[in-house]
Length: 197
Image (tube, rainbow, N blue to C red):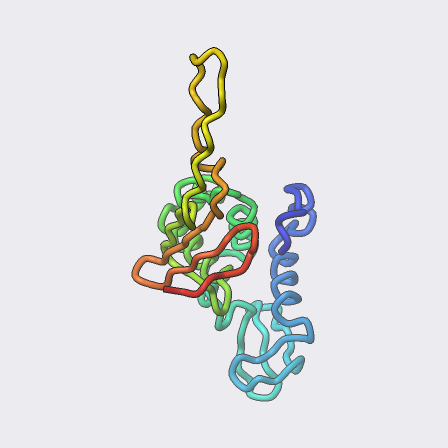
């Protein structure tokens, strides 16, 4: 679900009801047809309309699109999951569990679990840093040379000070540290990670 270009109106058109949400999740997870999580057969399952599950024609096991995912054994409608994913991914500063519960009309505990499971789905397979990450910046390298004092005729004006902070000519270095984990440093202009410490 590309939420960067998806407006609220477009989202509503894409997910008008529960069946549309289920179809979207199934196409996203199984582009070649349903895959049985037990025997691994591809596109050899039939949809059981009464129980709203897939049944594998090879091993006769029943399954849904949420099997083996963070949504496994959920009692919430897939439309609610889709709405929660949209709200979390579209918010630039994140969404609290309290706000999520108000917007979705679910309890705080349900919204809290939704948020954690959705963030688990959004995590990369091999993230560089995870959990709580703290970021700070500093100017690295030797300080700049002092400027020569300019000659003034009036004698009242002081020479301009050496630049500090963002005005310095020293390269800016960003450091990100995972609590209890790795440390990654890089120069924003170079976009290349430096060796870990």
